[in-house]
Length: 90
Image (cartoon, rainbow, N blue to C red; front, side, top):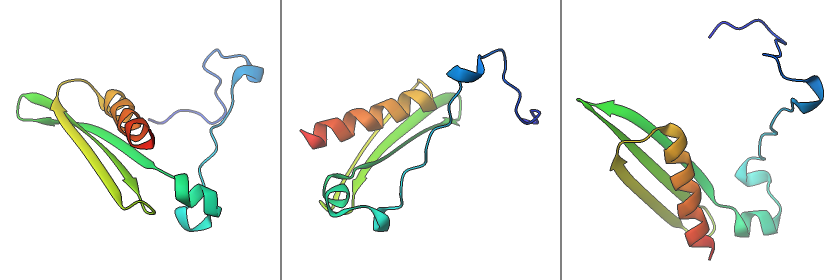
C-alpha cells in the first residue's frame, strides 16, 4: 500500500515501536545456533479453498517439520509454525 511515511494511524508515539530483525543464522552465538528454530507460515487460495502451510527448520538439529490444512489465514499459519517449534523445543 502507498501509505505516507511516518503516519501514526492514531497511535500514541510512545506506544509505537519497530520490531528488530533477527540476526542471520551464521552470525548467531554458539548457544543461538544450538537452540535456534526458524519458522514460517503462509496461506493462499487453491481453487475455491484457502490452504495454509507452516514449517519449522533447525540448521543444528537438522529438524524440519511442516503442517498443512485448509482454511484460516497467514497469521494462523504463522501461529501454527510457532506451535510446531514449541513442540520440537520440548
